[in-house]
Image (cartoon, rainbow, N blue to C red; front, side):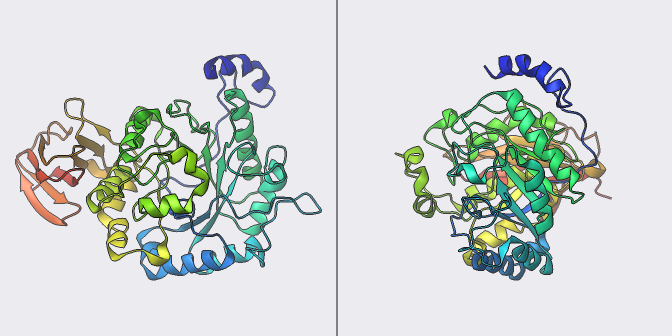
Length: 425
């Protein structure tokens, strides 16, 4: 149905400046060249308010998150009033943000942070009302975001409509409206129909800086639903990301959803009562420290956004250390923005080419028993050499090898990440 809608909509899209193949015209220079890093409010479930956002900004600074590269503070669904003002403009809920969004953006900027907001063109899902959706109001809403000093927009489909041609028109309209403001606003879209677990093969790189791969990630290693949805665990989300590697490039990244490190399963269920039906029968357990390290490692290998989803104000030292590992972050932020890939012969071995000829190699144990995983420099695509320098990015240790790369005995769901390059000189 989606493909048929695309074909039938091509002639209609010509009037909107979209080519006959359904692909929109080229974008100008992107607002960011590497994956964004920051925080998003959704997974933590904290009540949004002026106070909680400013407390989060403070915690991002004091915890070292900001200095590690996490600069965006993104307010997900729940910041807006359910009706527009007398002039037809979006407005923040005055009970939650008495000084308005501009004041919160100023507070973030004064602390070296950037502010993001959530919006949607439709209201059938996501708990929105018809008064605070943006389809038909793109120019006015983009101007409002720019006037407030917003730096990031998450634009969520929130509709059961599967007409791809309609999606292209809507997402392109907001893209053009944001561009017209003259302000650099990072544009993230979620074109997925709620509950549809099928990965989106459509190339949105000409429309947005970032596009969601598939359905929501929840804080589990695996979902009881497997690859059939309606929510994914870390393992299912990674599986869905693999076919989309070609869409990752400087200026556009694939989005396997916000991070779930530091978010316990009981807390997630408690703070998301609206997902009770979706999560029925899903009993956890919460992710272990090893699973959380693997989660962050794989997002780095995928060149994915690192948007923390935990409550920064109360995070444990363990969670902070996992999120702020500067060597893992460097893999994620490598300027090539190449999405890593599993080796055909052993999907437990992931490879990501890095700037300067080095390679990041993740040895991942996806199973419930301890495993020994090995590979070679040649298998990872490194040129032949007498010796290679090896850096373990979690243990922060150096070694050399003539070609064999070993992870040792890996505990269930744990990962070793190595940076390997020719050398030893």
